[in-house]
Image (cartoon, rainbow, N blue to C red; front, side):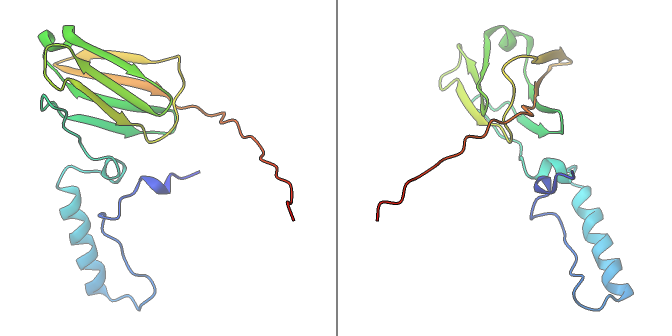
Length: 145
């Protein structure tokens, strides 16, 4: 299934309900190229870069199997960083910074186990596996009339 919800409304769209002229197509292609020149893919547009209190940019990227959290951080700050997560949010805590606790909502529910991390070139990447078996509970009611 294609993840339609990943596209942002800021990504250029084309109106297919009116007659299509070659000039319109050319203008549309120019808009798309200008939009992609900003280094923002349609998949990242729905989850903008967020800035915690220590001004380290955090990226949250959703794929079919993982939610990736990418954080630019120095080795000294990495030693002070504590990361926790629930099924719907991730918490980053820096003990040596004021307002060092930042919470970010995740775009989908994730599993508790199977988290992978890698730190390379001052970039911490956390891969949280997407929870694929969401439990549903049926709600019943009685007519009170």
